[in-house]
Image (tube, rainbow over all chains, first blue to last red; front, side, top):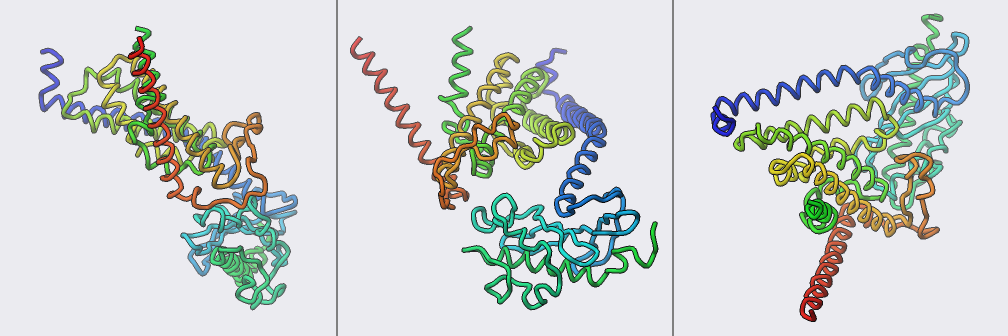
Length: 206
Length: 222
């Protein structure tokens, strides 16, 4: 039978569709396996890089392997611990703020004394030109957290200036910095509430 | 023969440009053209997918029954985009971090299905490859122009962050057009995209009309 005739048959069309789907699925699953390891490695390198931004200094353990998961106010929190000679010197975890347009995902590093080492925004959907000053590439605002802890400023000053606190808001965008300040404060409260577990004091050195 | 290739090239770049003549692919267009660099990245990624999909569709065109062609094309295109997405993620991770968002958007770019349907399914592999390349480049050109216009008016810069996309060697592209510019937010937001597209479209129509008038005038005098 000629190809033109064959092409009009229902069976051929069904087979063609099925064949195309099968072929592409095989191709995709093969490719997915081939790239999986490389993608994982690249993402781990990415994560390490973003963690090291909020963790100044040298640590001698593999951050990505030394983790602990604790219940926080918004669900489970995955904490990465940085050690020097077996002692936890700092911890890094994610906090989420509720901004003007969806969640603002931040990562923050806290020293064992409870001081903020650094905060970075990982992803947000705030208004470009107004709310995006929380990115270190756009403004220095995010660095204003460094060295702060619960007590300096006192708890009621952990807010933007408009709310009587000490942190700057941006002209035209108060909701965004307010959300970040609140998230960071929540992060510090989480640290205080789970200090023993975070610093691995109760369980001793692994 | 050469005339045919010239025709395909002109169609892709200007006469039948994806954005300015066919008015296709406006969704990814408005989403990414807040800067010229973003436009360039999206354009190049789309060009690669368009070229590949045109070649594949054209090479299997005799096997495909007309009745089921659309689902087959869609499966092919979606697979291609996923493959490009995965390989960039694995082997060009820095580039992927810049382009990542755009690559998934290529699936919803109707220009690719449009070219598969309108051109690749009826023409030889060479023609289809050239058409894919030229349509892609035409699309890239329009994205860069629209992105450039929006970026100049919106933030006063041109090709900001180009080194993230093209490597440090291209940092010279990054220029500040208006120093100390306060920014014009409207142009960065989607409405600014519509305005830029509309005005540029009008400009192209004017150019085309002038050219037609000039050709008619020359013909009259001859």
